[in-house]
Length: 186
Image 1 (cartoon, one colour):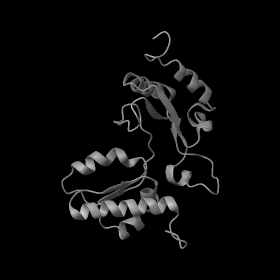
Image 2: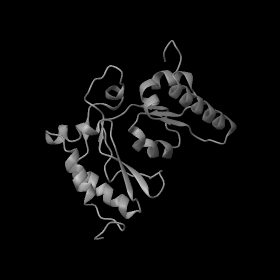
Image 3: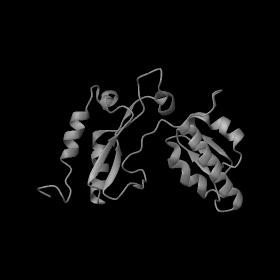
């Protein structure tokens, strides 16, 4: 990883993986899959150091998890992050309290700040079309969500790649029009 040792977040993740590896050894965990930034960035090294892990998935490769777990004897996989952004049709479980949800509007970043690994980890900026976001927002509201938290690695760049100009203000106006039971006129 690096000669100075892992930083706190990386160390915490590694400790958690090792704890789960012990659960697997004891039989309380059948398969161990590591997904996210750590896995994407360090999968080859982690694979050598953590034989107890069955699969390593990149930050957006989680959509392949079901297929991997369904396969009885799937060989160990190291799946990097594909150029991917989920759509309203991508199966998703809201793990937040029922009244709130995160709404991803874009993925990646085109800026190459020297201190930041996001472009390397998440790739170039990919805008999710406004229509997709509105469709997803309506589904979330219909499921009882009352608070949408807009997330992206670079919200200010929203729309530049897809529309040729930033469209964050347009997106927010469209989201404001999404009706829910608590909104006047609904």
